[in-house]
Image (cartoon, rainbow, N blue to C red; front, top):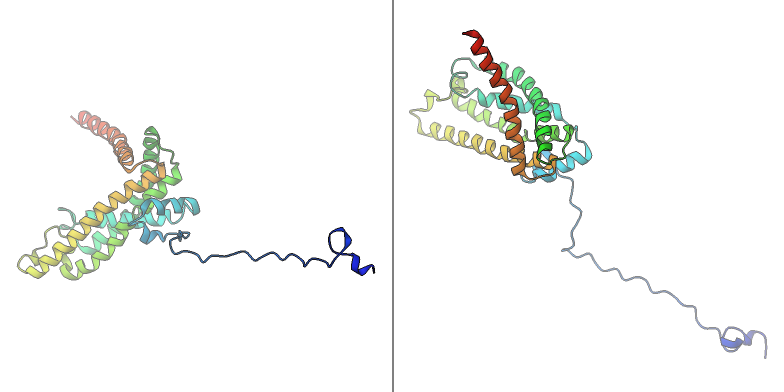
Amino acid sequence: MSDSASTGGPGGYGPAPPPLVASPPVVWPASESCPRPSEPPEPWVSIWSRPRVTLRHILETSPRRSLFRLAAIGGIAQCLAAATQPGFGDAYSIPVVVSVAGAGGALAGILAMFIFSALIGMTGRWLGGRGGMTAVMAALAWANVPAIWSLALWLPRAALLGEETFHSLPASIEETPPAALLFAVLQGMQAIIAVWGFVILLKCLGEAHVFSAWRALGALLLAALVLAVPIALVAILGLSLGR
């Protein structure tokens, strides 16, 4: 027997076995029910419906993003809303109100962000929170988004009321039912945005401190109390010394 016939098989006899070929892996198509990675939220939109997820994404990526700009524009929005209260908008012209709200509101918004970040950071830790100064600042700043969006409502209000834009009770709409109805709708929309903005604030503060929105409300009330007590004491002392 030749040497070529005695190779390959077991014991050195018979033909060589065919080579083993591994079968390709089976790849099943992805099911539509399989969860997909969620896209990063767009803060200016997602904070309306997902404030906690939005703030968590901000804190994990760029916690200092746009803080001063948000605080300044939010302060302007708050001052414009306050100008419609009886006494200020009724007494001053539109250029004066807009100038005061623009300069004073921006400064007040930034200053309030620093003061309340320190206070809520402290009172939040009293209640078991873990948020640092930057996290609380981000929560306060991004909670201004609804108020900033509400600035768009001033355009139809100005077109409707003209020189009475900042009047608390505009006389020009008293005898015009359609104008009065539109004014009521604008007022209602501003009220709804203000209420939902406060809910967003509590949820953002809760996420910053890693606790519930109800505990965030407690931290906010404690911060207001800590701020109000010394102011009240100084006022009482000033009144007593002035007598």
